[in-house]
Length: 388
Ligand SMILES: C[S@@+](CC[C@H](N)C(=O)[O-])C[C@H]1O[C@@H](n2cnc3c(N)ncnc32)[C@H](O)[C@@H]1O
Figure 1 (cartoon, rainbow, N blue to C red):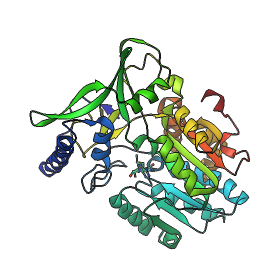
Figure 2 (cartoon, rainbow, N blue to C red):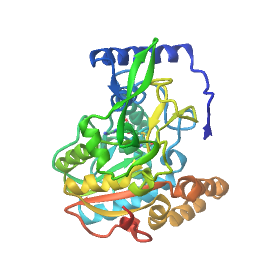
Figure 3 (cartoon, protein in one colour):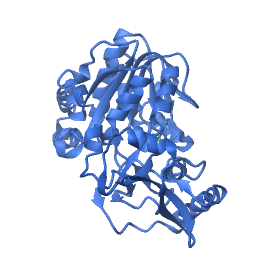
C-alpha cells in the first residue's frame, strides 16, 4: 500500500459522479445553516443512496479495487473463522449472520469449510448497507458455490430473535465517525462547509453530545492541538444488536487499538485515512464517493458499548493469535497437501495474515456473547481482555 500525496486521476465519468455527490452534500450543508459535522459528511460520502462509495458501482475490495481485506488475501482466514463458528454452532444449534459482507468471498469460503466439516448452518444471512454489493455477493456465490445459494438469505434490516453467530470483518472501521480537536481546555468539532465551489473543513466549538463523549475519554489538557475521532454510533448499534440476538456470539475483526493506545498523546493526528486504488491518503474531502474513508477502531469503546447493551466480552486478541488458535497451521498443511505447488503463495498469505508488521497485530478480534459464556477456541492462546 502506497502513501500518496499525488493520487491517480479518476476518469471523466468518475469525476462527474463525484461532483454529483458533492453537490448533494452542498445542498445538505445549505439546509443546515452552512455546515455539517464530519460524521454526516462521511456518512454521505460512503452511503448516500446511489452515489456513496459503498453503494455505487466501483469495485472497492480486491486487487482491482481500492483496498484488500483478509478474505481477499487468503481463504485460510475464513477457514479459521469457520473453525470458530463450528465450535459455537456445535454448542447451540443455530445460524450465521454476516454484517457488511463485501464481495461475499468470506461467506463462500466459510461455508465451503463448514460443508467440509459437515457443520453447515441451515441459513447464512447477510446484511449489507449496499445494494450494489448485495448483487456482487450473489455473483460470487453463483460463480464459486452455486449449490450453497439456497442457504443464503439477504436481509434489509437486523432480524429479531436471532440465534447464532454474528460476524463482521472490517465493518466497524467503515462506520462514520466524528472528528474533534482538543486544544488546552477547548474542544472543537470538525465540520464541512461549501466555500468557493468546494468542500472545506472548518472547526467549531463542539456540540454537547460530542463534548460529553470526549470528556468521558479523560484525555487531559493538550498544550498542542490534538485531533482524533470518536464513533458516537457504537452504543446505538449495540442496542440494535442486543434486540436482534436472543442467544449467541458477535465476532468483530478490525484494525484498531485499545483506548489508551488509540488516544495516546503522541497520536495527535488521529487515525482517519482514505484508500483510492491502493494509494493511502489523508484527504477525505477529495474524490468524494470514489474513495474509501476509514478510521481505526477503539476496541475499549466497543467492549464498553457491548457491555452497556448487555453483552459479555468473551475474548479480545490479535488476529495472529486468533487464527493460530483456530488451526491456521492445520488448514495450511491441508491446502499444501492438496496443492503442493501453492507452497510459496500460501506462505506469503500466512505472512500477511499473521506477521505483526502486516495484519497480525494491527488487526484485533473481539467476541461478545449473549446467553453464551463458554470459552472460545480463538482466545485459547492469548486473551487480552485485561487491556481493554
Ligand atoms: C471495508 S468493507 C468490508 C467488506 C468485507 N467484510 C470484507 O472483509 O471484505 C465494509 C462493509 O461494511 C458494510 N457496512 C458498513 N456499516 C454497516 C452496518 N452498520 N451494517 C451492515 N453493513 C455495514 C459496507 O457496506 C461494506 O460492505
